[in-house]
Length: 597
Image 1 (tube, rainbow, N blue to C red):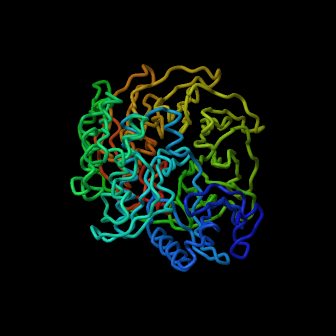
Image 2 (cartoon, rainbow, N blue to C red):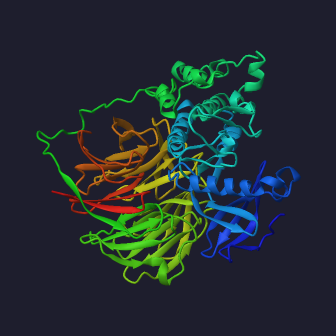
């Protein structure tokens, strides 16, 4: 059985696009929904269901597939592939999952040969957090390896996929093991027909995955190690690995299950406090040239509205120049317009007019507030009339998704940063592409104009920030100090300071005239995704994957307060023009409005 392109499933709710791949017992397809959204559908292979050896176990096989699908469906976590629904198509049980646009971690490893310790640990900690949720639901993955981890396009986000041989477990109870395993990543217990099951099975594979990412070498298989073939420590292949990480890997891959950490969190704790010998120490360094106020009054903020209406992660927000409106963009492909003072929903831009066909990742109001620009993973930029919601034009030219859009202060030029590694400048009046700025070696995650419109800043996944002369397109300089993706850049209102937020969990302030780093602000415990100055330049806000928003005093770098309330990644933050209102959005599908008391 192989479903052909165009074949409808589940009463036409899904249409098969193509076969994606197959494993020992399962087969996966790419399908499209009635709303033209991509999904992955997994089912059992016909040759397994019809195989004589399985003849008397077909019902149990199908029921096991459904049970595991149900267990996976309740494992809601940003780093676990999401199950949408479960249904039967004839005799075939089917599981519908989100389609993750991006790259396998295994393919990235092939391109890079090996990953830096900082990058590898970021992904491993994310997958470790996901495993903790999975294990709490009584499920073991049992096939952890770089090929079963996806990296979301345009994000430093790892997602665990392929639960084809996942099984339930009761800690330390002896249970049967299937013969499916991946040499080098599977622990010795998976080579035994019966053996205890526990978190230690996935811990071995997680440690082996980190070994592979840091060395580019597949570890010696557990079967060979049982024959006294030595497992070389990862330091043998990569002398830049820190001793703490080297020891944690070897402990996680101990042949004796009872000598390994018994929970994922216990193993992750072995990695804590060390992010790699190649990573510079981050300290706050305050420059005496930045004026310090004699007294900094404490600020108190409270959440006054939580806006719900999007059906998926809210990726972008923007506040109109007059402070009356909020625009929001989401993974549900929609753009919504809200009243800032009341939180009332005013308009859904995609309801009456043709909208984006993929996630809306960036929004910007024109300086006069009449236009809204939106950047999307469908590789396009759209311009909308704010008062009517009418789509004015679609700008095409990027060859990959658009991560950021920004209007010049005079409203005549729009800048866009893309996963095609380029920045494009567009003339608003004509919709014509003016120039393309190239120089980054990885995706451009953020662009921002200086207040005089003469300089454009760009932040990239190549860990760098570039400053560009707008009228000539010439690169002015490259700012290097972050050691991971630069997710956001923002100019202070007077154009003298540039703030940058990074996946290295830090914020840096730079002096624009001298291109010198002024200080590093630390306090977030996960990737900083957005930074924004208040209009008077006194405050800096940051949104982070640690689910918090922090407010900093811009002139001293002092942390003023931390806002909590989102229960998933905080993505974007923006100040109202008067600086007394702050708006944030999150992967928890909400927008929060915070007011200063």
